[in-house]
Image 1 (cartoon, rainbow, N blue to C red):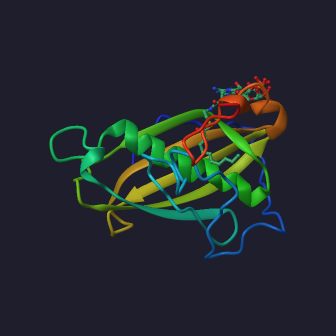
Image 2: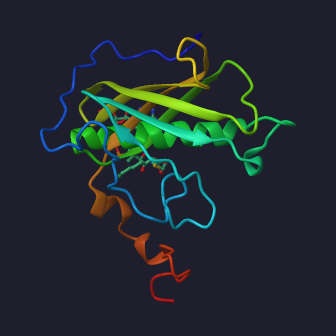
Length: 179
Ligand SMILES: CCCCCCCCCC(=O)SCCNC(=O)CCNC(=O)[C@H](O)C(C)(C)COP(=O)(O)OP(=O)(O)OC[C@H]1O[C@@H](n2cnc3c(N)ncnc32)[C@H](O)[C@@H]1OP(=O)(O)O
């Protein structure tokens, strides 16, 4: 699939953390109200990202009617959100919390409502705090990708990064902190 994404020349291999989620198990370190993965989010993708071997992950997502963009097909921005979730979860195999720094999507074919998108993702390597990832989406035949993505994720200190925002967090009860 064509892409304009270029990996840096100084990219280095990264290693799976020995305590990372075992292959075949859901990576579940995020929170329940997340739009991408949360089970309690009132609207969301509810994507389960499954650890694979090495630095790989997989996921699937049923394309529901509310995800429509063009008539009968998924909205492209929503697909990019799914890629963000799949790739953004993968650095937890390094036991490294990250946020998205840069995301690129290559759309190859329309994705019909009612289909199930299968994602495979992998960590390609890193430079300092930067983690480079790639993911591919297909509808059942891995030889027929419908889209692919590259993501650059930046390692963060979770407490510092979200300091000043946590009082706005919405909880499953529907209440905000302090409300
Ligand atoms: C925790 C579990 C996660 C589970 C799954 C989550 C999936 C969903 C993920 C998301 O959607 S996160 C929400 C969207 N992203 C954000 O809100 C991030 C907003 N941006 C920031 O907070 C800051 O810009 C950021 C933390 C990414 C970086 O700021 P810093 O001040 O900490 O670092 P700095 O600016 O020095 O950048 C660090 C390195 O990244 C590079 N960099 C940063 N942004 C870049 C960019 N956009 N493109 C290319 N490189 C970038 C930067 O050049 C530098 O490279 P070098 O090491 O080579 O100097």
